[in-house]
Image 1 (cartoon, one colour):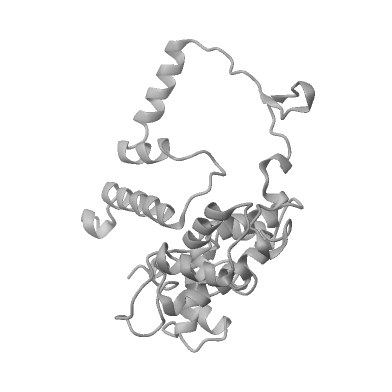
Image 2 (cartoon, rainbow, N blue to C red; image 1 turned 180 degrees about the horizontal axis):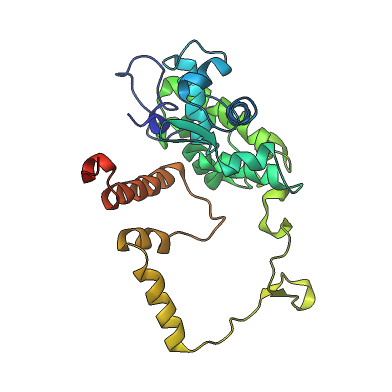
Length: 273
């Protein structure tokens, strides 16, 4: 079972209960940050589910509250599970251990947009007045196909998470506005830029010309050293900092994992033992 896709969009008990078509967490952003912080502070950066459950005050890994809270942390992109071990992501580290003053706010905004439902609502209304709670309920039920019994909880976690991520800072709870700290213009100016006239944003330096043969040779060498399946995934990655829905992120991760498993079988499959 894909816990990341399922834990946040269905009740903890009763596998036959209806599921919403758009993923959202049962716990808000602050609760998800707490999970990542606990793993970092109390487990030294890595632990199993069995170890995390009592750290969060739950009786075991099958507890519905534990599964929902862990699912929320993964859906926000703050915790990942590798080889059965849970660990905070780099995004989470920017929140609980920021290097620059704006790191935490920027990372929280990205975590908010990592949730499929929250991203859809933001893109639909960004900068514009939000509908009333009744209007949001109708939108979630009719357009986003959220199960009726889950709608009020979805709106609650959306509003609480938006508050934590700073989306209500500029215009109050009536509008979703990207926080200033998340604006790329507020970041330090990258190296290799020059000032432009009339106060416009700095322009990148023009690329230096290079011999066609040398450039082609380097590209061929780079591609030749990487298996085609992996090279294709890397080549098609969007630019760094591009927002991505949780569903698309999971498809990309699964494609990469499947390619690695196919190209590099474990020792038992390869007959090395």
